[in-house]
Image 1 (tube, one colour):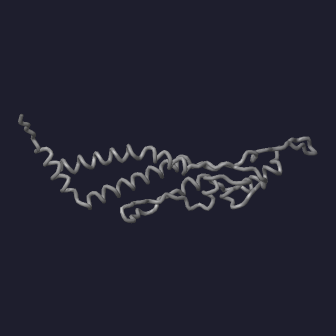
Image 2 (image 1 turned 90 degrees about the vertical axis):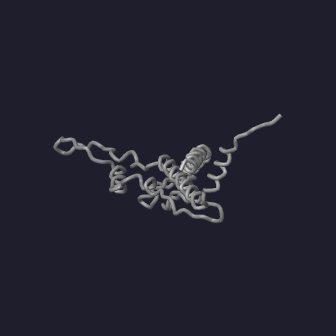
Amino acid sequence: MQVKADTAGLKKFRDNLAKLSKAQVSEFTEEAVKDLAARLLAKVIKLTPVGKKPDGMKETIEVTGKSGKKKLFLTARAAALQRAWAGYVGGTLRRSWTDGELAKSGSTYSVEVFNPMEYALYVEYGHRGVMVPELKRVLHTDTRWTPGRFMLTISERELQRDAPGILQKKLTAFVKGAFNA
């Protein structure tokens, strides 16, 4: 019995594989790492909480004057809160997320995703007391534990779960493009 096989397709595949340069593979890897970093950045920004002004800033009391006229005044607490929170704009932590430059060490590529705000760590993992980062002070001191939001931790886990599928699609497109060229 004699078996005949057409190896032309296999030879073409071998030749195309040999044509891929280290530069092309390196460029593909860099793009893939940057894409994963951008995806992580988008996820963590979406999960980062935005601060809001405290309740009670509009508490009023009604005072009747000598003439019998009634007027509304802010309570002392509400007035203090309004003074303390004047000019406050939330979202600083969310807007501060950024990514660093692509780094290569041996065959490992990396991009750091970070938040330079000094209080990002406390929002991520939790803290004691009531912290108002924009005011850079504590308005109410207490010993209650404020739980962390884990925005980066959760985003990293989601990306680790999704990364194999993302990379598989990118690799398939890269190989098809390289072989069809």
